[in-house]
View 1 (cartoon, rainbow, N blue to C red):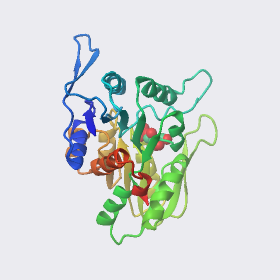
View 2 (cartoon, rainbow, N blue to C red):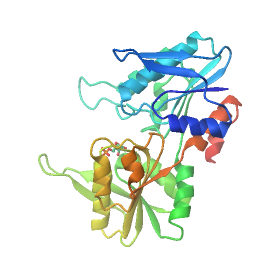
View 3 (spheres, protein in one colour):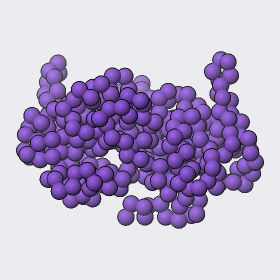
View 4 (spheres, protein in one colour):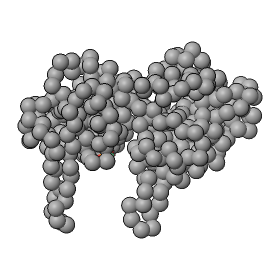
Length: 310
Ligand code: R5P
């Protein structure tokens, strides 16, 4: 087994390597003067089972290109098998045509990864489970739920918890986490009653005097999350925290969360947290390296990955 890291999240790749006791393979991912990506694998790779760890987080296009070029270099180095390990799969939100003459970019990115030469994909909390079907190669979609459960038990022990999906699209994910911790489910239903009127947030479920945990796959601008937290508190919730797998946190998102009524936002480190996130008391980082590393070990040993979630 060999592990190669792109530049998107080196600390995570190093933690995975430490967990697996497999050093990161010697490679160089550099730029030409015009910013073209250049990759050189500096050790023999013939016949190896290789895992390329790279989140396609911001700058998404650069990190995607790095991933594709690393895979190409490996294929030409006669490796036995290449698994693209995408702790965060960028472009996943573009998984359908929102209108006429628009792309399905998640499918295009899946095609690119396959065309580059990946034999398998390992990822975590895909925006929609059916994106697995965009790949014609085996694709394992891990869930952050077990690490969230451990954190919830340690942090909110004994509290009367309710899990809340911030939109209708996230109900399945939220219910699954609720079932693991024995918590009831509520749903924030965003609706624009009439064109030109602002959105109304209806809460499905009684959140009065409950400690609410919002659950989502992505926090990007923070709008969905902060608005949902406000709506829950307006409807009588005692407190609102959130568990979100991928902290995309673009633009002013960190400030927005810092100034929000959220008590705590827990994210994993599938995307490398910035200094601003690490310094903020509102944020907590849940380490994901062991879960991903264990799935990699099971992949290389040809053992069950799904049993990680039993
Ligand atoms: C949308 O369907 C996703 O699950 C997230 O709710 C969304 O990407 C969050 O985006 P933002 O933080 O910009 O509201």
